Length: 95
Image (cartoon, rainbow, N blue to C red; front, side, top):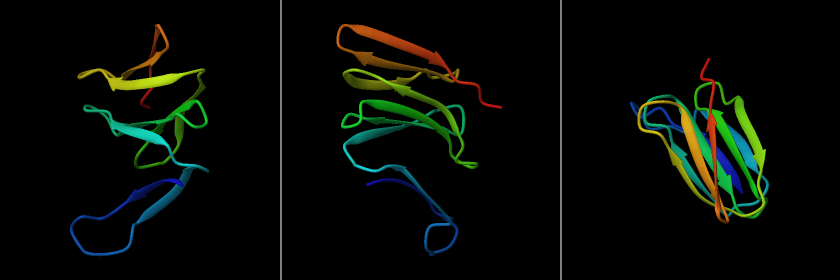
């Protein structure tokens, strides 16, 4: 399963937040370097989601045909996903 789990690293405990992102596994997760966003690429369901870590709200959800690679821009909340011989770019709203 594809679950998003958040822990409080100042103390040993169970996860403080838990959210099911995908019903099946088979994806990759990338953290945005400048914001509190994560991108989850699921190759089994051919989709990509961008989620705010604290609020766990989806900022972007996209269906793709053959997603393969996922990367964030270093300074701005922009994400790139390759799909076959194409590159797709999205600028994600952080607020």
